[in-house]
Length: 79
Image 1 (tube, helix red, strand yellow):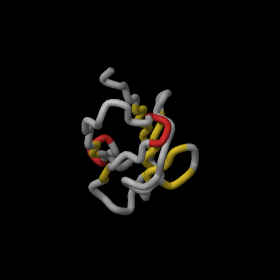
Image 2 (cartoon, one colour; image 1 turned 135 degrees about the vertical axis):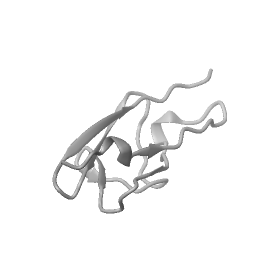
Image 3 (spheres, helix red, strand yellow; image 1 turned 90 degrees about the vertical axis):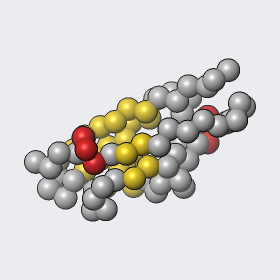
């Protein structure tokens, strides 16, 4: 199996207070472009696919050989 732990890079950035957590489009990158990134079975596009982060969102990475790794992302407000 391909090790997917090293195939996920997340860029955590701060945003202005008052950012709407219901419509965030996070940016991310994977080392190998053939790795699929999905949420609820839907392919994700970095910086474009929006999610409601008022509760945790689970990202699933799938390597070309079928190995998967789930990442749970929790966004908290700095308020």
